[in-house]
Image (cartoon, rainbow, N blue to C red; front, top):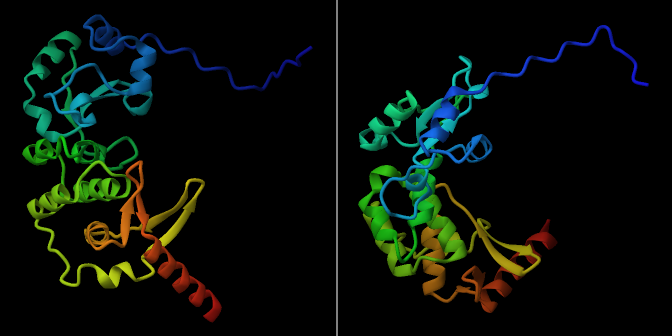
Length: 246
């Protein structure tokens, strides 16, 4: 038999149904409360590019995340403020989606520009990213380029085009010093040995391009960036010498 705890804190009373959720479901902007809380997005899209920012331009913010106890609809980018569907959403729900730069913890809500860059930096859609670059920024684009240099999906020619559009100057030494520095390392995984490198600016993007063009890197059958046999041997020899000297 469970002992009765006379000093236990009483359980909080369940919250009444959220009126915004009910209006969103009734308007066809959400399937149900569970999916709305899980996805944190309402069912409305902007344009036809396959960008998560465009597919989910409005975030649903649950009331438990708000100090005033009221659920909100937040735009994922300030340039959606001219989105014509906002009036219809406000008419249907009584809540107008607005731009809020910080989340409930005071953090920048900057995931949207990253989504836009990484989703559209492909050979098929990079022109669309350039045409809608106001929805992203240089930092997000460089992160997207790093990703696609590592995992494929964007050709060297098109990567060079994007770098030129964002005025990223090409290193005069064709990244020779960076490629042979400790910033470019051999990383091991279950599938084998991969290229490990990162920089805060475009340096690692240029290094991937130059490495591929000069035969230091190659793509495996899945498109992942790998060392050539000769450059892998050079890197491993350099690492072995460094360990012996330590």
